[in-house]
Image 1: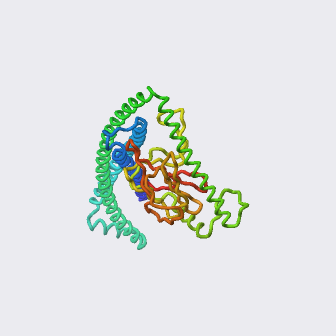
Image 2: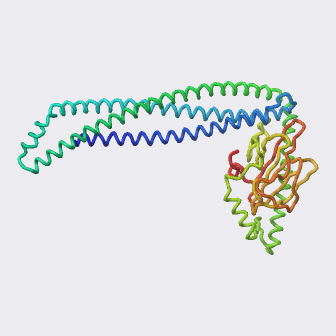
Image 3: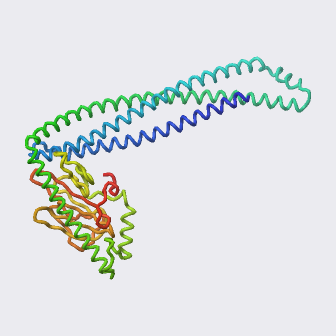
Length: 408
């Protein structure tokens, strides 16, 4: 009986460990599948927003930028799909090992059970059971022998149930194995198609870059001029924010504060705290959008020697797209410029959101806006490109929107 208990404990521990491992891998598989679907959704958005009208004349620079965006997402999709296939391979191997172990355990259980049945058959007559009890030296020994007979019968039943449980688990694992193999085959087939599409896009990218290299100085000059315009509006935003900080300090009666930070009223502090509590969950300023240029320093896709400095995101969207405030606040400024399109700044305590490259504006300085309220429309250039330049500031310091906006 001691041997049986030890075997039973080992089998039980094996089941618990395999169940935990299976749960862990299943959770990881769900996480990867969610990311894969997100990248697939992004590709659909890219095709809809950037490649829906291939006949319309676009600049070479815009085409290269669009293609780079698409290639980047497609590479991410390939990587995630590979990760999923590799995880499935590990799960398949684990299940195959588990099936092999279960078969061995099942054979052992069946063999032991058969021995018990034979032994039970040989001593099954009521006479032999009675004689076994009557041959006891005393009542205590007879009682222990009766307990043994009852335990032996219970043990037989437990062994029978254990065999049934193992058989059912084996059948389930075999079904899981078949499903996993089908899922892996499907992923591999899908990835083969995605890789083929990537190769075609890389070829198209190289052809476009070959055309650009023929007149690189022209395109490099355009990239520098564009960055110059962006820097100009960023300087204007910085100036306006610092003026607002100085004004708030003056209003609070503290003109000696040189910290470069807002002195906030209790209401403004509460608003800032509310804004911060929504970090990672702020709504997008657009219903549809693809980030073409991310936050921070990065090389130009046209000329790698030219550095792009992005104070926020440049988001491609559809024509006449409505721009929405990502949080409630007060319109700090409406910027109009001779060589650029209008911008709106909204203050949320010590945080400020900037919406640049607009065509129409529906708010004025001092207006109170609510979360999701339409504040304007995005400008569409002569090449049919519609880009919102969105930035987020803590005081006058630009911060990465990726940490604040929720996944689209």
